Image 1 (spheres, helix red, strand yellow):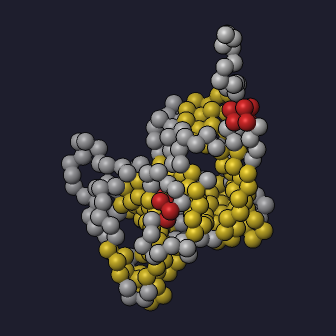
Image 2 (image 1 turned 30 degrees about the horizontal axis):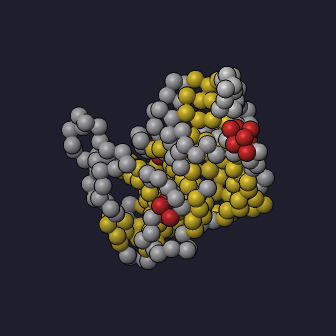
Image 3 (image 1 turned 60 degrees about the vertical axis):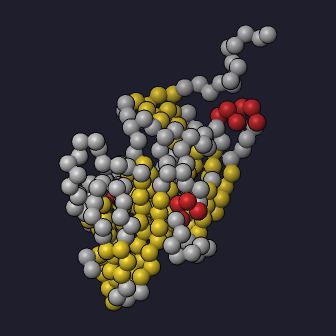
Length: 261
């Protein structure tokens, strides 16, 4: 598991790459009152999340989706300063796109619909509600002792966790083959506010998350590739997401059923 902390590097570091990401990016902007910065101009689909503060056209909790392609955007802090995260995935406009720039779309986490809200906390498919097509930025809050998504890993999708408040335990589940052949065991890693955790595709190592005593709030950025296959080791399920099919398979050794020499 790749991990970095936003206090450990330079202000302009790519935190995703520092954490070992393969094809996604996240940068953190901290602006003093009245300060401004022009965001990188790219042909990617970018997602901005305002962590705290506000400014010209922005307030805390805003999620802004800049679809591909888009014009250059300026981030300008108000009287209280502004802290924001900018995520990007390498998604180009489709071949027959007319080339005109897409206008940004904004939704605030406080006003967005929840996919889940209850005793365990809250889960919001945030960027999707603002029109994101190629990736998602989801907001999660877990109360103390509660688990997030079931342990899982992806074949094609890449995930990136950014922890905003509190602390949690990341649990890593080895692949069934490594359990059979190497007797691999689960690992646990403690994370806190400011940590960025990268989960690249095709590692075969599943992950799960449990909130610590104060609870935890975080963002999950993930690509949305139609050929992705998701595996759930605890329940031994396989999910072909593009087909809408969930089934179970039997884990076997590589040479199971093959004739001996």
